[in-house]
Length: 96
Length: 373
Image (cartoon, rainbow over all chains, first blue to last red; front, side, top):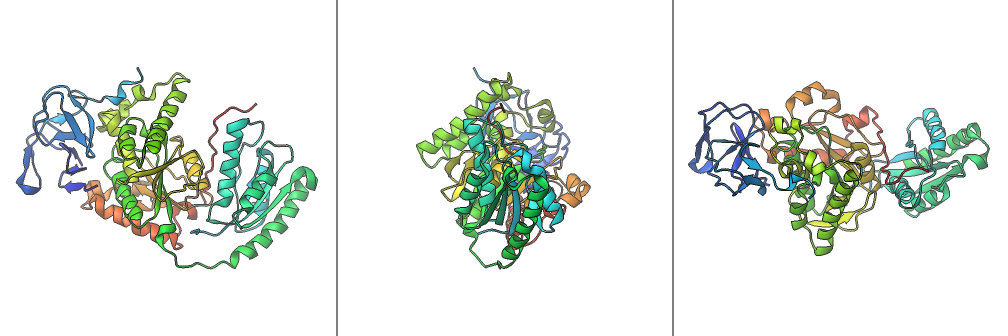
């Protein structure tokens, strides 16, 4: 698994559309990625939390570790915090 | 091929545990493996306990075994001894009710293990290929960093080892709940795929029978606070340890692998039971990631303790072997630490002692699948 440790964040897999904060990241911080990609955080990202690398449309998959970890319940803009307020897991809904 | 050369004393039943300990106290260099089971167990539960004890005796890290039983237990000491003996190593059995009480058994046992120590001391380390290594991956006391640092790094290590034709066993089925469909996609064939789904379903059902819906109860409030958003994310963070290889086989608890490569074993998330199951399945070394810090070791296998964060690495320095926290607070990549763990495994396999061995940690627990009667 080609995880990239890029300054303030960890990109777990090249297919991911989120990165995880290695420490608290203030709002308005510009994160630089390979190939000139830049993302500005729209809000504070606490340690261990995820920030969107790209727009994730409502209903589309949040990808981490190269796999779907949940669906966006509303459209997420790049730089937004990605967590329980805008993502829902599918497996964790318990046994039906 | 073992990485250690232990002489062990193995009770077949709780009632002979004290005797095993008493002998080990009197003879330097032997290890007793006490356990509280072996009596009044039925069918598959008794079978699993027996299989675990046999597996421990058969582990390649063990040079010789003295099995001690009471005489009336379900898990028969002569059967255990005989099965272990099929591996060709030196095995003897004593039964307290036949020898005539515990002091006499201790005296007899001391003579036997002293002889075994001489026998074991004649073995020499040989150079072998890394493909004879079976690594067990374990996580315990996980934290928000586990899925970011140590577990992905261990995944790199697993991939490296499997590339060299070694074997990695991933366990702790409970922690796969939520990622089982992802694991199932990587199964080598349909049989393995169905078995992966079956063992996860079995674990969920077992919890439900006790009134607990694991899928609904996870992630926990603590997980959410730490940044984990969904059950899938949590479980993926755990199963990362096994790397990206295809899954070749699914083993029951304490079963030996028949395939090389990445293999799953059905164990609970409980660390002592999981590590015991892995070692009974023939694992020679355990690579164990921890965020909160656990000292757990194994009586016959070196446990390499990998801290997920630099704080716990510094705080529990005497119990920690590798700091994966450098991925979070330093400049190391997951790849760097993965390679570091790989090289440490080779050193440990060649004789380097881990902290858990130096401190004498012998945690041991057999997973029960039925009650005692």
